[in-house]
Image 1: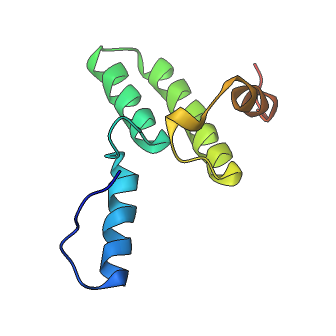
Image 2: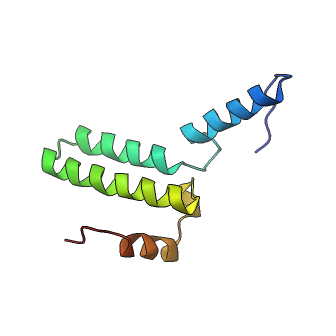
Length: 94
């Protein structure tokens, strides 16, 4: 994605890019963090039981740790093989 940032400082431009990436605003590229937050917010809005929401939050904490370790930032980077490796990494498989 190309976009004028209208700044002269390279450091400031890099910070703006990092902020955009963290918010998942790269067109159709949604960050893992944003997707997890949106899913959890939707689960709460639907009135799911607190135990269900807790399980989703636990799963997403593990997913975020895994994707950070693997260097994956965006949902579009996840394929079946990566998700299988994530599932294999679970410490609480029940």
